Image 1 (tube, rainbow, N blue to C red):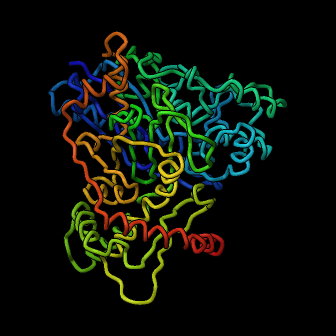
Image 2 (image 1 turned 90 degrees about the vertical axis):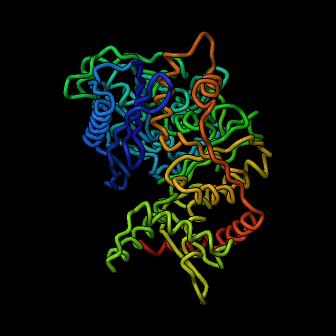
Image 3 (image 1 turned 135 degrees about the vertical axis):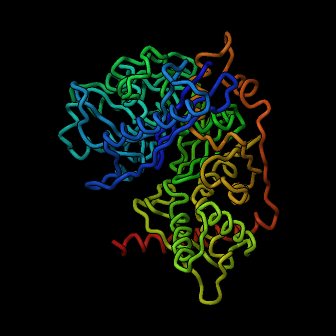
Length: 517
């Protein structure tokens, strides 16, 4: 049986998905993990990275054997993806020079601002180049010793294949891409090298090689096989596709790689990706410009916080249920609270919440404090939960409004995936926020690792010059079941009323950051 494996390292879960020749998932395995705040930086240890990869692979292989009765010793193609951006710098000996700095860090404000002005191109704080330049501005000793700079996905791919490469979508979160060449922008690299003249490296020499979807990106080495599967059953020589970021795999998993399509991923963080017909008229600090896995320009609105605060409140109600002896599953708890929220007022009856577990560049905050505010008077549970559902996507709406209202970007479809969309309520809330019907496909629950597996399959299965858009449309999603939900006018008006309070009250959030240390 032909099989294709995708493994993605998300912010709270590492998941492996194996697909068969019909492009359907046939086995999966997962591992839960969490980032840690150490010495002022959000990070994960490399021991945790490999332990999580190995467990997710092991569980997937066990699932495959339970379903088929066969052991898993070979796979036709493998691909790895992970959280985009961040900073992983290595010396000539392959040693990590400083602990992994993830996308979640908002410690590069000065660097991001200077580079945005230098390039005339928005450089968000979480991009790898912002982290590098901030380390230079800080005078960090390790910078002079850098031999290789990559992302988490690039690091894993390197250790398993020996190849220093990235898919173009993932690379576009490190440094700006020239979409004509599908490579890093040479003019901007030259400008950066002028800033880095005192160092013994040039930027292009320490960055990965950029590849596009469909290209082969190396094979699993004997050392890599043992690292991925310590049991020794997995054989080396398996071809790898280019490693991608979670944004690119989300686009693939939702069939959103063609122009005038978009997808929104809503979980711990939330981001929307809109594939553009043409370039934006100017640089916006709220909008990231990245690419699809084939290099098409994409406008990305990214927010660091989405459901974390909402999850914390749902957990609190779960604690109360347990306290009074009610046996309620987590799934039932979410479903009940979410559905009840939709019985409340469309504008949440004056309640407003800020879900900021971390800083949000879109609203100019380097740090966050979860905050709930209301006027004196009555308060219903439905309005309370609805306000926190709205809060989960409120900052995203501020960024998307730039595309829709100022740039007049057109969309044919917006597809949702991630934890927020496990119930139809999440679709209704997102549709009210963006003013566009939201579709969720049955396969969207597989998420990024499924998209990564499809990229591995595309590399091996495409015929002739078959482009990724046609491969997905004709051979993967031609008969995929889906549900589309559009907002009522009452819901649109209610969300806009909520947003008016939300925007006006951002001064309270800033005060909370300044006073709650």
